[in-house]
Length: 80
View 1 (cartoon, one colour):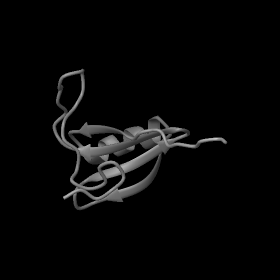
View 2 (cartoon, rainbow, N blue to C red):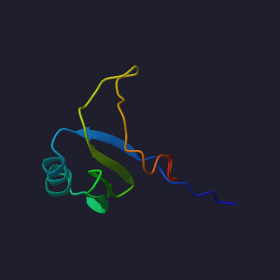
View 3 (cartoon, rainbow, N blue to C red):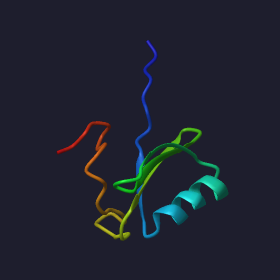
């Protein structure tokens, strides 16, 4: 039996949402699959790589990354 699974989505916080989207789409070749204009976050894909961008102040947490992500779509399900 073959198992299929999705790779996790990596979240990136960007200071300027429009410039961040432009960078990943135009320069790195990502396709945008979803945009939430009200909360300023989007989903992008390039082959098997799946990322999400959200406007916010990039932060460093334990382990070298971190920060907040929008209250929507955490783990593929709506979060309260």
